[in-house]
Length: 382
Ligand code: CU
Image 1 (cartoon, protein in one colour):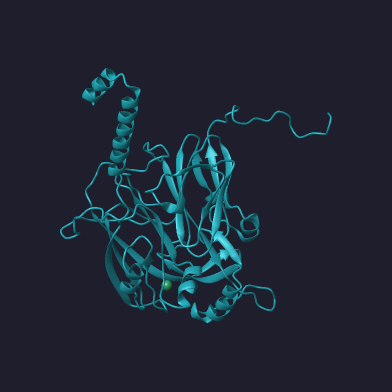
Image 2: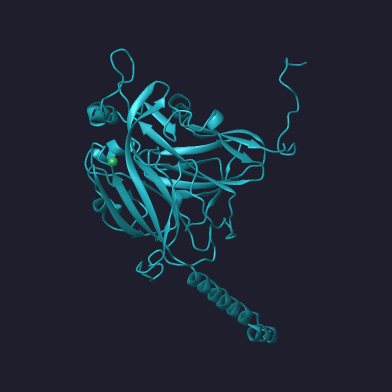
């Protein structure tokens, strides 16, 4: 480089300077391109044979497994995950019960966290006490049916398969046992998400490292319940007994309930999420079956990884961000003010009438510089 600059100084002819500058710019541009990993490249060549197994302790959402971003640690592992299917009668609103088909007894199923190029070894257990076949389709997996064909289990069976987590981002998983049972199982609660962290860590819009203090998994779930002649939501003796009514209601496409984390007010009041001023909070939100759009009343998304892709540059300062059906999206916000925030689907009819909202209580010191009351509400002109 020094030689080139010396040469540049010696050259008085501006035309030559211009040509050399263009060449330098071109070389710099080429170097940049070289540093990026193409999405078509298979990342890592190691096979999972003899790789270390690490068991992941799954937790009920909105909590997510304890983890580190582990930047700079290139040791791939096999992450062992066990999901047990539970068919449960779930109260999704006061006095309203429906048969929920669940992974590990929660709607959504637990968030799984791994790093790019780790392997996920998934065991799906369908206890004999259940009534129907289930399986799991990972949107993050590469291969036929996302593992669905390898994991179909009847009551009393279990199956295990392994896949390489090649794509960094957040992705939905869901049950997909075939035909009409696919939407039935998904709208009965059988979906969740996985977060695959990039090996070199999350980056902001300028390529700087991004850390988060807390992370929460919030999923929107649409339920399609039918009322009886008295206007009361029907209850059934088994999941299958309600499938006829459910199918009819699904054809209308309008859910009876649209809730965050399985039931009305699952994340409000005493169940609200807690945070502090200054904390950077990562919100992972999925919707397995329906489009939604998320807004944080009183705040923003500082960063949003649209489509859930951590390989892309995040967009900044969104007021409302989309979560298309069958996807998970990650957004990060640093809280600047204390108080109650509402995290909701900003179709306000769906949020308020159907239930798609959560609350976040933020403690800390108020910043007058960002907002303050100038005049209390009072009579006009007084
Ligand atoms: Cu299922």
